[in-house]
Length: 278
Image 1 (cartoon, one colour):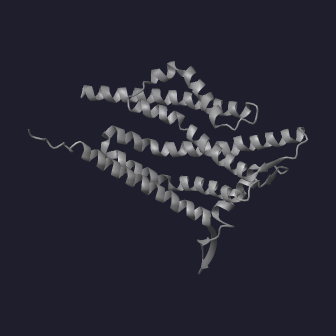
Image 2 (spheres, rainbow, N blue to C red):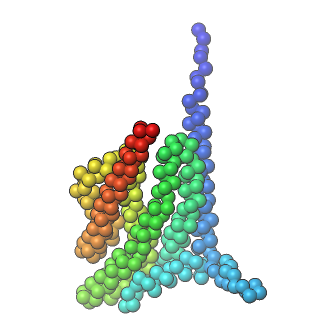
Image 3 (cartoon, rainbow, N blue to C red):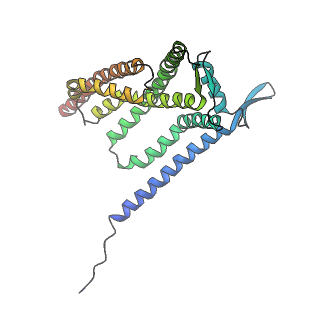
């Protein structure tokens, strides 16, 4: 009786893919760690070289880039009568870490995407590669637009609402520093990510996975999902005002996605017809 040796032809590629995936994830984490350390532990100063003024980094946790951004958050978003307090000795440290992480994610995004692209590109068709290349700039722009919407509209209104509510109740308006900073960072990331809604729709249509007619026929579900996302990402402290504002904005983006998907589908159909004629 002969014993056959198990075939490893199918296992080897899987192991190689897992090794490469681990390598890519490691590189992403290294990029994040480097940027995080820079923002957390270094400040920015200037030196004069002849007639030029050059920015330089210098080690400082107390005047780091993250601390400077935190101070900008405090000056821009906090009502003048709202007092921040530290409930935990490490609250200032955690706040600086939150801001450092946000800045690190934004700064390392191109490098992270490069690692992601290097891993998935070999398994994609050419039209799928073109689609991903096309959405990179809109994806970045939409995320920045969403984060800006949270920073300039949602957060100031929310803080003002909470401040006036405290005054109406005769309560001293105070807020934990850690909760304040984490709320700002979380809202900016969450709203920025939710603004990718129409891009996901148009990408699925571009790849031929979902027809534009499907988006049009299911617009009620799109609006419902918009309200659900708004309920998830909002802090829930304004009696539904912030949730409604986010939901209406996302619903508008959904309908923009429907229009763009229809344009893309018509263009793709036109191109196919021209190829058939040739």
